[in-house]
Image (tube, rainbow over all chains, first blue to last red; front, side, top):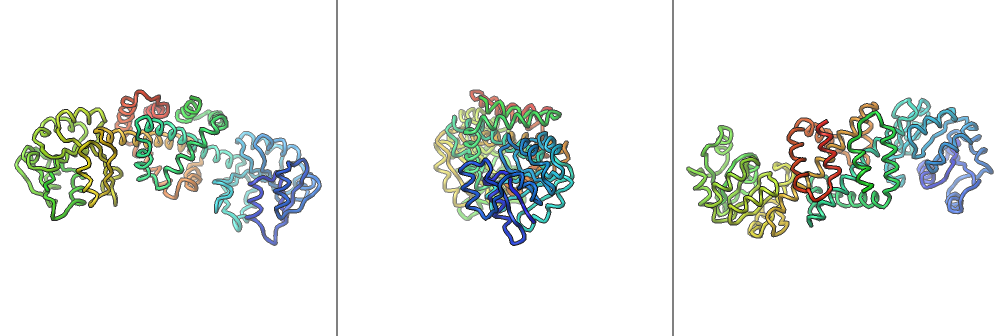
Length: 244
Length: 244
């Protein structure tokens, strides 16, 4: 079996490391890649072809893991050469996934949860062809959601809906605690019921949100836009909180 | 040492069980108590005096653990007879705590966190006299917050500010997941990062909030009222969500 990568960031590199076995050949290309990516590719145990077109043509599974903004272009450009499974792992909206589906014959949309360098990342997949990827369970936990392309992207959005809104709750509650000089006690008292790691996890969430508030706001807007049939009181409040 | 109880619900009963030792005598009264409370008192190893006035007069530590609405009346009625520490464990607002302070000489305000029948409940206390209760650490974890009467009540409110708002986030996110037929997957995917008990804990929070939405709304209103100098975007949204 041949697995090809278009895009070779940390996600691709870690998948390759998890899947390494005598049964699988890995291929990619250096075409138009940055110096950093070329270095990462050369560090990895992967064959290098001249072009991504070649990679697409020769792969049984073609993995697209790039920046969200380039996902659709890549599908348009190389999807037509892919004869096997096209696994899209980009962090894109369900709408983009459905658009990609128009350019790709055997699309599976996937979401990797947790950090990819987690001890055990979990891959959620959806789409009719996803059954053919369940062999990946030999290497990493792989769960099929449904036959509907787009469900993995929706699930990622639902997850985001919870985590980003909770981050806004944490920001607000800890601000009030701080203004009453009870910030340490606030985290401590919640650790009793929320678990020992509550403080550390919460502070990391708060800082991550505040340091990337522009991107987080965009992602909240995407959620509001996609789930427009639901009344999103809390998500809209989170967006307001981030823009304060 | 003599510890007296005004109010003998589960909180008082469990404190008595935790504190049981040869060094401590426990007293209470059956005066105007319900049949259920009288039964609970008779089950417990506690001396019964004729009146709560007697209980107040004879206690080194007088514990008030009643319904929030009766906390102030009890302080007015019996606070003047208490010569030792008056430990208020009622679930009351910081404002009520400060009002009680006007009727009671040696007030300590306390908050028990987690269910009282937790394996290890934690008692937070504040007020100048709270140092004299630190011996309770021999029996249950007891933490002094500060010399300010009211800080334990504020801390309880801060805790509530987080937990009640997160409940509203859970209600909203799981509703959206349900409307996309991905409710199980929603809980499962979050368990990966939020911990194995996430689903069970979340469903219990959601049900608890929905089944007591009137009381939860009142408590959110109390939070909004007390922290009126902070801009409460998320808490106000939670109130709106509960009243949908």
